[in-house]
Amino acid sequence: MIAAIAAAAIATAPTVLSDIKPIPIHPGMNIVAGFAPSGGAAQIVRGWRGNGNAHGYNDYLVLTPKSEGRPLGVVSLVTGDSDQLQDFIRDDPFDGERKLGVLTFARARVNGRPASLLIIAHLDETPDRPLADHDKATVRVFQLVRGDGVGETTDVFRPIAVIHTAKMYCNAELALRDSLGTALPEEFAGQNRIDGCWPP
Image 1 (cartoon, rainbow, N blue to C red):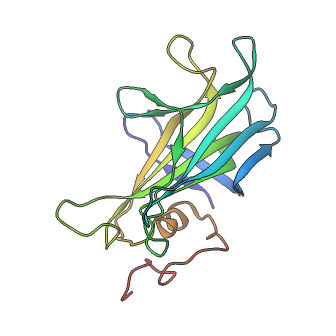
Image 2 (cartoon, helix red, strand yellow; image 1 turned 45 degrees about the vertical axis):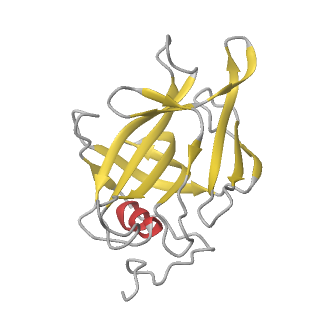
């Protein structure tokens, strides 16, 4: 699937994403060959952050080779208009059937060139309404690139595109699939494969 995404305030021309191939990430350490901007392997650590109730989540830490003379460096996520950096990346599985937020690491082509991506899909939270219950979604695409220097990590995930869905969902995995054509994970547990809501 080829997606042309007009990323207002991020790019002056549409960002064309194609050949998106999600990378499976299991709990613990994952070595992803050729994922770093240098061409080297990245290490992606996934761990469960429990909080004593039904709403724990997965935390992810991404490491790439060679940062300021050290063998490994943390990859930060550039978030918001203020260019704030976020070291840990998390999903938001909510109750499993309804998912507020999901993420995937992927290989793809950006405007025809190979790229390493982080894609985050999150249901928009409408005030005074139940969570993950018939909401539109926002899908954000980040590319792993070298940092700009002072104030940034050696490698960063920088935003390159954003998609706002018109359709409403109860599971962000379906918003990600519909927006970028990615396959649903094998462990998908939504109420249905249309919007994840009950009734559909």
